[in-house]
Length: 416
Ligand SMILES: Cc1cc2nc3c(=O)[nH]c(=O)nc-3n(C[C@H](O)[C@H](O)[C@H](O)COP(=O)(O)OP(=O)(O)OC[C@H]3O[C@@H](n4cnc5c(N)ncnc54)[C@H](O)[C@@H]3O)c2cc1C
Image (cartoon, rainbow, N blue to C red; front, side, top):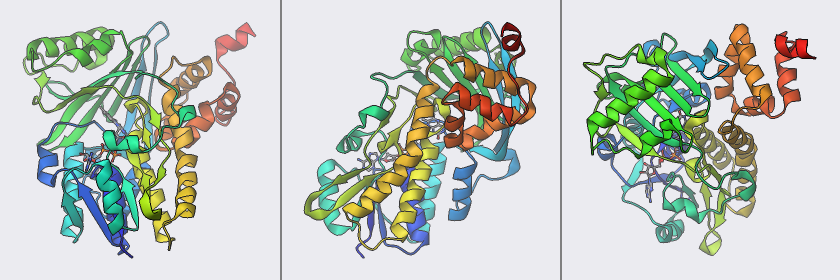
């Protein structure tokens, strides 16, 4: 066997590389940067990894941040607007929030220390075809960069023509964490969402804000403010948003100390949710398979991009273990398995970018009065297929809530 060539040392490429290495299969990881360069770079994202991803990391022997005080045991949801809703819940398996520079750099070092073959340098589309001559299968796991365009978009799973959120995320001094459970989810109708959490990073835990703005909103305006141009103006605007829209988070601000931790600890941008066909044929009967963001690029609002990347790496890894020929039949089978997971997850991740329909509001109202439903809401992030199965129609939501003894909102019952 000539082995598998993987392009990209993000969560998808690293987890697949470590998995194949663990099973003694030949694998080469093509990474555009060394572990040191990844760790010294700009904050790429602020990923929360849920239970299923963490279980795979334990199996891979890379669960470096699993101490209970480094994990989010649960979440605090606050919905603002005319009908405020509040509830807290617990994750069945605690979630982990680790700086992705630290995470990816460490896992790349793990792979290398265990004898992994790493080639440093950016790969382009022509290289992919050339490298295919040296491997049985090419895997493209290079994230949202240009290589993704090698794989055609699937229009029916790509519901928007423009990004639905303007994104700013960064680490801040002088801001308390969201509360004892570890993750704060603040939904502000008309504005977007502010996620408030603690991240494990190089110097220990720091407080993170992920501000997702509906285009045209005050939240969205932050995405267009360059920190470098005027740090004070940027930080004052963050404080304005907290004071105005999430006063419970603002209560944890220490004005004398508040500020971005470092200019590099900030990411701004926008993501167009996109699902691509995860297989293409290269020359000479060789194939390339896409995993991670190359395959499913999701807005961070549902916290599913990296977790889905981990699932896609696992699906492909298991399929490779069972295979002898990496031909069209193999690729189509993998494609079916990848799509079976990605379709419902991307549908849910897209649906929650739109104003919530009444049955979703009812789900949250039910969670605010029934702790078991609140916990089920949190478990939905770890089981996004079940989340979408539950929320895709009013009838399904009602059926799910009935399991918990919920018989409908009192006001609706009265109106009926
Ligand atoms: C602000 C923000 C918050 C987020 N929050 C969450 C969350 O809470 N939960 C969640 O699940 N997801 C979240 N996401 C999404 C998540 O970051 C991505 O889905 C995930 O990182 C995708 O992993 P990946 O391995 O496919 O790609 P990446 O993490 O982008 O890794 C790709 C790697 O390939 C390298 N590369 C790129 N081009 C080349 C090339 N030509 N040659 C060689 N190497 C190359 C890159 O440098 C990188 O190292 C968030 C995203 C953002 C922006």
